[in-house]
Image 1 (spheres, rainbow, N blue to C red):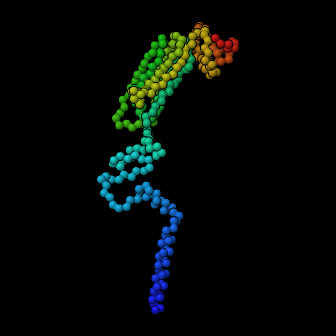
Image 2 (image 1 turned 60 degrees about the vertical axis):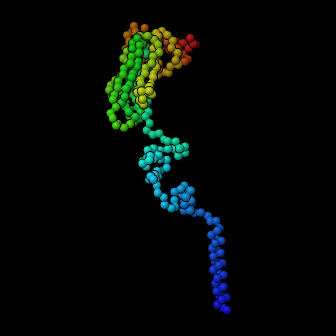
Length: 261
């Protein structure tokens, strides 16, 4: 009798323990870092159970990487937009150097250019400028690009590298003139171009361009080597927005307050 009673008591204890464990496991618990990591991996599909046969190898690239069918990285994309990121794109700029804003009639002008960019420094270059009569002249040069040469950052200063400058004439007639430099990159249909303007004012004329002191000094310095006759011929009057100046004999003299034409 005692044995049966003892067996019943032990059975009840075991049953109550099983029930307690089941209830304990059913209570939601706070997920630790390991738990969260496993959940995220499962949601992202990175944990796969079972075995599968793949027709092609599974490519796992880094975040933001674009892979081809051979699992090779061929580019990058913006993870926020999904758009491909274009890197190492050809880009060029041209600076026309050595050209003043103002020249007197007959005064020689000269200029050169500098090309900077990422890509290829070889290619066709066209330089267009006025001759002494104002007619446009174009000088072209070309350089063949060697095969398999990679793109790179470069600076091509034609005056420093080859001693080349353009112009070398004085304009006979007053007016506004342009010089243009064109580089056939990135393509002939979309070349890189720079244009710069300069003026030749008529003698004994007003020239209202709100000139800075540096511009006035440039004009003054340019007539130092002129003969007295040339100085008289090229007598010019300028205004720097508030006052009128007379350039006669390479000396600037204030002759009045600017009142308009």
